[in-house]
Length: 415
Ligand SMILES: Cc1ncc(COP(=O)(O)O)c(C=O)c1O
Image (cartoon, rainbow, N blue to C red; front, top):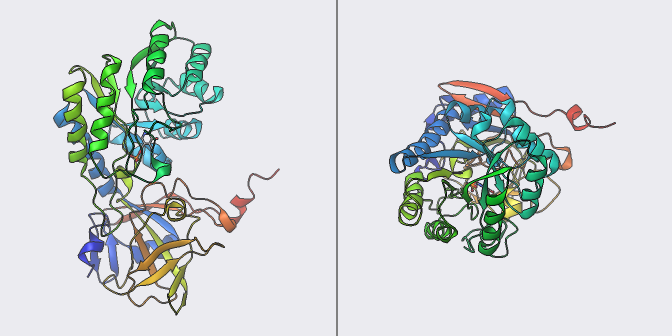
């Protein structure tokens, strides 16, 4: 049996079988046996259903619109392919994500380029590829585009709305002192400049106030802040909707979020305008789990359960103090509390403090839930860790989408 509160954090296809927790019809013990640990597992059906929730929520409420996946939340070829197949766009923040998106077959016209420090090289790549929109973050972006654009490039101006998002300070991007976007007066100047430009076509405005935001009012304020800047054809209202990581968390649904944004848009933006959305975290977070093998259990106050991964594959805990929940895959009910920790040489390398783990022993398989967003993104080689594989599960089949790094990979860039 899986405790109901833990089940509510797993991908919706999760079931309890004689083998323990099964996701997408594949027992997690079978995934671990075949691909090793640590491993990232993505439930493809849950992922596609969540994409559909955003797409449908917008289509029901706004005639002209498109969802763009904020691909920084999971920038791998397989994920870009899913987005292309689901018919949504992607936003990329730089040349690397752009390269992967194009390689995966995402249509350039549904790619949107972000960045607060886009280089000549990145802008040239985007122009050569023919990306649909470039988001102007600063006046140097305008200079660069005018110098590099061979023809005409459609752009949005990113506005800093002076809205403080209730989230970790490193994830807030809409407040007055944020490094992102232009203040309202500067946005006005940028709009005037672009309107006179021969190379730039001003499509509209962009706003994004941060990530992991579970209150809806700040989103309304951000949309309202755009109203005084004039009437445009396109408004990109960003991403930022929170995911539920813990038993105590609340996160609005995609429907509630889209309703909030479109309600504000109906009041203050032109009815003919196209609305773009850029959710990342809330699209992929719950579709993903990470599997670890227990290496050692050190009994005491607290008891430490140390696994074969940690901050090399999940930087969220040490970077943002993010809390996760976990279970023993074959005994997913009750237990704890113990401290689930990683194998890296830092005391900050904890995965779940006070984890409810039922009688954890060396060799047990542990699942940490809601690791689908930003964990793959920020995976690293700390202590020579090899970045884990990405495995998609669906209809009883597990497919390797990105292999585990090898020790030789660690030396592969040496010259
Ligand atoms: C410009 C932009 N759009 C969208 C997102 C996606 O945010 P989230 O993953 O919280 O939905 C981000 C990330 O913070 C971003 O910087």
